[in-house]
View 1 (cartoon, rainbow, N blue to C red):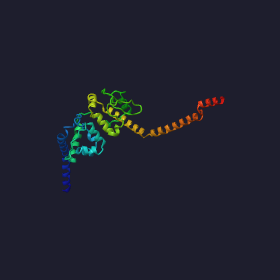
View 2: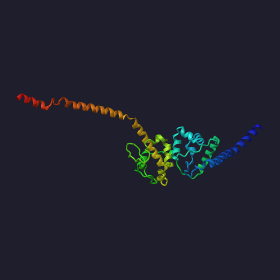
View 3: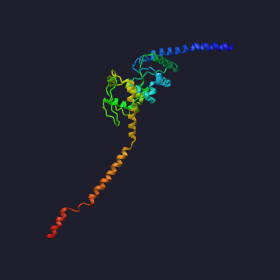
View 4: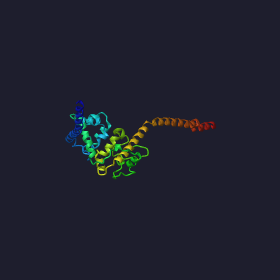
Amino acid sequence: MKTTHYFFIAIVIFLLFPLVSVFAQKNGETIFKETCAACHSIGKGKLIGPDLANIQDRLSEEWIIKFIKSSQTVIKSGDKYADSLFKAYNQIPMPDQPNLTDEQIKGIITYIGGESSTSNTSTVSPAALTGDSKRGRDLFVGSTRFANQGAACNSCHNVDMNGSISGAALAIDLTHTITRLSAAGVGAVVSGLPFPQMKETYNSKPVTPQEIADIVAFLTLADMQEAALATTPYGNYLLLGGLAGAIFLLAFYSLFWFNRKKGAVNFFIFKRQMKSV
């Protein structure tokens, strides 16, 4: 009798478990459409905020929950990726959702995952690709054209790096942009086009995910090389070289000083004249 009872419970759980999953997704769908859909799409491109397709594969569930409940708290905590998203999307703060429970947000994530698998998006996250720093440098300086014929990055930006052509100063210097925004943040900025000039330049000629990964790889290398140069004691070398040069010049001029003609020329002429008187 007891075995039959347990068997019946197992059958009920087996039958109801899919319904619980569907209900969670249904609830997540409702909340997404009421709360998130005004700013975000799933596989249909960027709106006010980024496209959320496959976000569950790029970010941890814990991070997503914290960000949805209070994005500004995450940004102010020093999270570079959160800060880069904020800057990449025109610094428009995402409304906090403190009233959503963890389970409700998990339902939203489940819904996004389900919609991502059925959406027609072919977007590839630059973070999932391996960048080539050499190709990124060529794209940055214009030696290699972008696939969609967009302008070279150094038309507006500069990077201080050995072997790279100096760029323009129309926009911010990107030498240390990886330190400031992180690699993921830089990728978000290039894909998100947060600045009017960037949007005007690349909106109709978008940079491909692979090209973004290559540029990020180049900027990462530039950041590392510049940091290494900053730690090299060139100032000490210049100081020691200057001192050594000064000592050499003093020694060199002293040779002429000791062999100089002593006394005025007029004095010897005067002495000769006095003797002849």
